[in-house]
Each structure stands twice: as C-alpha cells, then as structure tokens.
Amino acid sequence: MSGDAVTVVKARSRLAKLVRADGVIEAYDHVKTVDLVEVPITGLDDLEQLLRLLAQRPDCCVVRGAIADGERTKGVRRLLHPDPDTGDAATLREWPRRWVALDFDGLQRPEWIEPVDLVSCAAVAIETLPDEFQGARFVVQATASHGIKPGIRIRLWAWLSRPTSGGELKWRLRTAPVDQSAFGAVQLIYTASPLFSPGAKDPIPQRLEVVPGESVVVMPPSGVLKPPRWGRQSHRSSAGTVTGLIRVVVQAETGSRNRALYWASRRMAEKIARGEMTSAQAMGLLKGAARQIGLPMGEAVATIASGLKHG
Image (cartoon, rainbow, N blue to C red; front, side):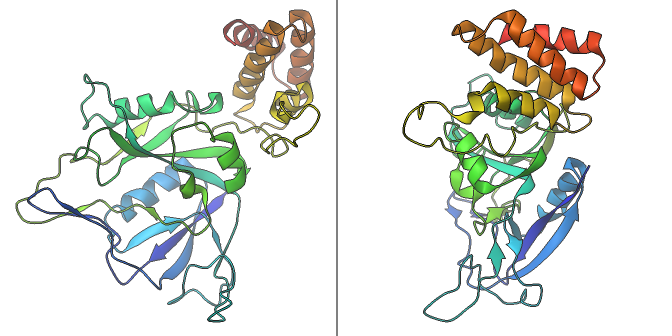
C-alpha cells in the first residue's frame, strides 16, 4: 500500500476553541503566519495516531495541500497562489490525498442517540455518504461544538484506495451534507480538542473513536469523478458507463477488490432496472473483470449476485 503525508500547520496562537463556564464558545485566534511540516503516514492507523497527538496540541491543525517549497516552511502565509500585492510566493499546492476529512455540522441527531456515543453519531452521518463509504472504517472525531450545540457535529477521517484530489471529492460528495471547504488545499482542518475555562465541563470526555469496517474506501477511478460535459448526453456522468464500472474493479488494489466488485455490481443492477442491459450481460462482464484480477470465481459470483440483488 502506497503511503501519503499530512501537512501539519503550527501557529503561535490558539487553534482550539475555548469554552467558557457560561457556555459561550470563543472562536479560534486569527492566524496570519504559520510553520508547515509534512508528516508521512501509510494508512488509517498512522492517521489515528497522529490525530490523537494533535488533539492535545491547541497550536496545531492540518491542511490537505502539500508544501510548495521545502525551503520556505517557517513563519509563512498559507498561499495557494502568489500574492500580487505583497510579492509573497505560494507556500502550498493542490495535492491528491489518500486520506479524507469529512465535516458534518448540525446533522439531525435521533433522540435515542446520546452525543457521547460517537460511533452511533458516525453511523447516522455515514448513511448520507455514497455507497463506497458504506461499511468502511473511520476515525470519528467530535468537533468543539458537538454536545454543546444541537445536532451531530463530527469529523470522519477515512483512507482511500487511491490518491484523490479535492476537486474529485467535491464532485463525488456534492450531494452529501459535508463541508466542501475542507477539500481545499489551504483550508484549516482543526484537530485540537477544545479548551475549557475553569468551571466549564467537557460533555464529550472521549473525543476520538474508531468505527470498525473495511480498511479502505474504494474510490472510482479519476476519470469517473469529473463533472459531465454539457451537451449531448450531458445528463449522464461517466461514472455510469459500463466501462467506468469495470475499470473500478480492475484497478482496485489488493484487499479492496471484492468490495470494488460488489460496488460495481450494485451500479450494474441500476442499469438492469432501467432496461439498459440484461442480468446475463452484467454477470458476464463482471465475471470477466473478476477473472482478470484473479479473484476466486466462486467467491466472485457470490459477490456479483449479491450486488445485483441489492443494487
């Protein structure tokens, strides 16, 4: 499994919210310049360890972007483009990541779920995400307002099957109730637990939990996660093409192939329901893809049949 990195931002001021005894929440300090450092990670376990460390660092947070110039990382502004007024050069650049942070702010919380039950809160949030995120493993983090303000206010961290750009994530998650700004290269993603003034009590004593599941979210290939070109057939995204679905299967990494096959089978079921193809055609194409990547045929046929049934 190829690795990745997280760009950690360190400031000389507070990057954690402050909760006063009267319940008022003071926002983050205004930050003009920061230090940047890239921390290598190889999977969700590494990311979880890093998040647990950063939760105790009210002077740190992270961004999706990569460092533009390793010689300029101290006391710099977060710039994706050069500043024409000051002449300051860009310090960050867009970079596809295998990790993703999904912010939910104010999602309705069922009455029978307590705010301290982060795993159940995460389950409600996960149901709003596309199919490839269903059944995946997540690190769930309570944001500063969770348990204080109404609703579910959490951040879900996941590990993707391939490096995925912010633009792709915006397109794929365009209908999900997540904060799209978190996919920007220079957007601060706050990781520190809130600070509490004397007399104030944290309603969420454990702010980081793990939702069990598949270790990798199988993302569709890069060519699929693009807005459609308007014109003839513009109402269809390339994500719906048979070729695109088969490509998802054959390009899946070891350990994620069976899940990719199931995902593609469910999408094929939609085509069958619309009369675009027959069950036999779908089964034949999917079996061919499974054979190409070396999946045991008995297991593959069972996976395909389940996907076609539940799609």
